[in-house]
Image 1 (cartoon, helix red, strand yellow):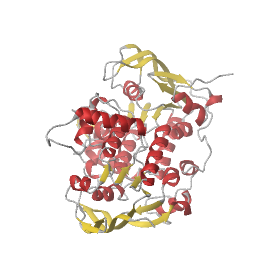
Image 2 (cartoon, one colour):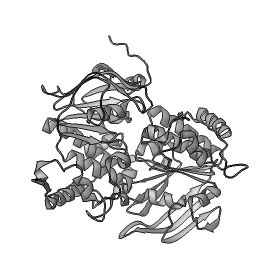
Image 3 (tube, helix red, strand yellow):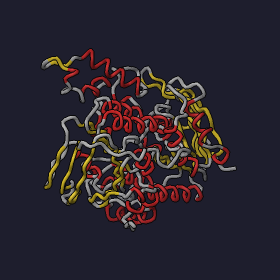
Image 4 (cartoon, one colour):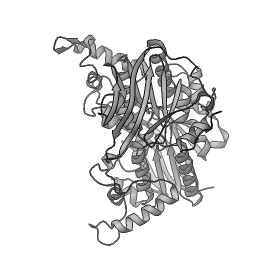
Length: 511
C-alpha cells in the first residue's frame, strides 16, 4: 500500500453564482500516476488550482503529508513539493525561455540574482533526459503553443517536485513527445513521487494511470484502479446515464474518439470542382527571421477537408495565418475568399477578449456581417439571440451571455470560439487544433461539424492539427508539413504509421 501524499476532502468552490466544485474528493498516493477525467466544466482545473495554491476553497480540507494545510499561494505549494503545469500558460512573454525557467526555480545564494549559467546547464541536461527540446535564447512571444507547453513542463521539473500535477499536457504534443513524456512520468512514479495527470483522451489515461478519478459537475463520481476499467465505463461515469447536456455519446464519431471506431471515418470523396483558396510558391518569414514556409503550393476545393499534419513548430501556425488573411507572404501568390473563418491554436491570445462577455465575443466576428447590421449600427438584439443559439448548440456552460469569457473553463472557451466561427458559414474555414481542451463528446461533435460544413455547405476546410488521429478521421486529403515545406500524402500511404514517419522526416516509397 503506497503512502498518501495529499488528500482533498469535501472541496467546495464558487465562482460568482457558478458552483465549480461541490464536495469533491481526491486522494493522491506517492509512487502512483493518478488520472483525472471529466467533461468541460466538470471542475478538474479548479481542483488542481486549489492543490497548487492558486485559489482557495470555500469549504473542505487539504492534507499534505498527513497534516492539514491551507496553501496561501503557489509559492507555498512549491515549498511543499507540489509542482503544477498549467493548462493556460503562465510564462512571461517579454523574457527568454531561459529567463522564464530561472523564474520558476528555487535559487541558491543571492536571492535576487539569476544564475543563468547554472540554470542553463541543469535545463539542458533535463531537456536531453526528457526529450523536451526548447530554444533557450528565444523570446516566449515568438513561440507556438507546443514550445510553450514543453517549457512549462521543464519549469515544473526543475523544481524537483514530490508531486507533479499536469493539466492537459498532451493537447499540443506530437505522438512521439507524448510517449517520451509518459516514460518520464512512469520513471518519476517509480522513484516514489506522485503524479496527477488530466487529459481528455480516455485511452491516454488508461495507458498510463494506476488509478483514475472522474469528476462530473463538480462532484467526484468515481475513483477506480486503472486496470479494472475501460473506456465505456469511463464514458458513462463522465456523462452519466441521463445527461442533461444532450445525447449520450453513442454515435460513430464518438466511438472513434474513444478508439472503438474505424481508422478512417472520412469518406474517400471527390472534392468539388470549384477552387476556394490557392497558394502558389508561397514563402513566409517567421518571427525569428528565417523562412517559416518555403515554396508552398496548395489548392483547397469546395466541399473538402484538407488535413495538415506535423510536429508543432514546422510552419503550421504561419500557414494558418496566411490562409486566414492575417499574415502577408514574402513571395508567391495567394488567393482566399472574402468570408474566412479562423479557429486559432491559442484561444486566449487570438480567439477571445477575456474581459468581454460572451455575447460581445460573438459580436467580434459579426461586425461586417450584413445579417447583423442596420446601416452603420449593429442589430444587438439579433446578436444576443445568435450568441444564445451558439451557447445552446455547442453546450457552452456559463451563467449566461453576460458572463465574462475569462470566467469559463478552458474547454467551454474553446466551444465558444468553435461555435462562433462555424456559425459564420464561411467559404473557407481554417481550424488550428480546434479540439484542444475539449472533452471526448465535444471533440466528436466538432469533428462532425467540420465535415458537415465542408460536405453540406461546399465550404473548403483546412484542418491543421498535431493530433494525427484527428487528421486521419476528418480529412479527405492529407498533407504533412515539415520544416516549412508542404508534402501531399498519397492515399495509398495514409496510415497512421506512414504519416507519422513523414512527420519525422522519413520518405515514403511510392510504387
